[in-house]
Length: 489
Ligand SMILES: [Zn+2]
Image 1 (cartoon, helix red, strand yellow):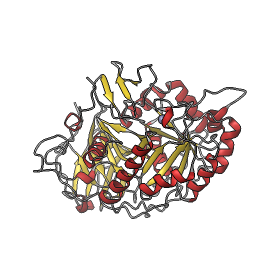
Image 2 (tube, protein in one colour):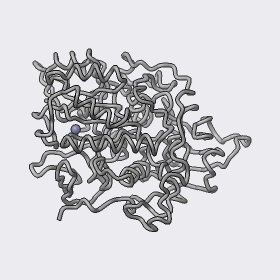
Image 3 (spheres, protein in one colour):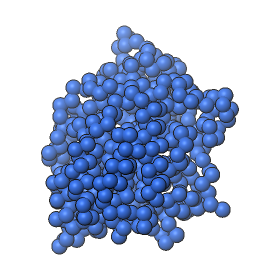
């Protein structure tokens, strides 16, 4: 059984509280100690028992791991809620399900869809992020601040540190706003009275799920010869006017665009996006090694779900995959144990080092749903009894994993030590998302984005910017949050 011992109710985040755990995953190690939180930030991390003068309630987590909240840079949906479901309650449910599974921030990702649908989704998310998550410190065009939180140096995986750009963080930056405010925007209590499209009854703070850090457009400027599960007929050639339309619809909230850099005109878009501070990833691509190197020099910094939707490594034409391995690209890895063999993950990890790899879920809305066929708008996915999501022809159609699944695969199958696994699920994605100065690690000064994990791999508590979103007293129940309406009869 869980050794969780919640002897005191959590107080309001603003008053501060202390978490005591024997297994706190901090940069470079595991600490038997405590974490003090006040004003939404981590204010102190220390060994042993918290000092009596620390103030606030002490929550004893026992043997539960305390980890930095995970950050998912590539997610299309979860639990029946799709990023193309343009209703605020869908986005809120997505955020709550993410929090219930240990993810505290994310880039909602729009797969390539029909043009009008992409425009509408950009408009929806632009409004949702700007209005519901106002005060997030994610101003337009302000991304790209490099540097992980201080303290990472010397975490010491071979291959680390080449051009890592890890700046000495002072940890004090970034005006992190409070999410929504407890009981704030659109508290559904009383309006629906029951779990359902309106949300779980009585949940205190809709705005307090995982924070959407900005929008990721996975397309539409992709190579139709590498569509993955997406429809090639919806992919369009690079076009500055079309891109600008999407950016405008999203009101400056697009933080990342994934494109195929070998397409004519793509590098002009790359340079334009970089000037705006938008992260550009290469993916769904057949780029040659030379084309990928050119893309790197034009400003592409990230390999989109490495190994997937790109040609395999060939020793006479290393291609995009070889370039990602060879150059200081960041790379993202669907670490669900299905999309990439654990041995291939291990090889990539040895090559790139922990500091260059971000774990992603690439989850689709069918994730967390039982086997069956689901209408995911862009395609019909079949969740097979083995848990994979596939098109009728067997093509993998996104993943059904959560970041928690990926963390577990990383630790148990790839053999990544906890501190490095935490870095790949939190600090590296935070840096890539331009929020490494305020998120991604259990370090004083950073946002109190935390989750506690028991020995059975259950998330027993999650705090988003100091707000207790999911606790043993007020648990988020996954089964109550999922939407079963996507099933195809
Ligand atoms: Zn993809």
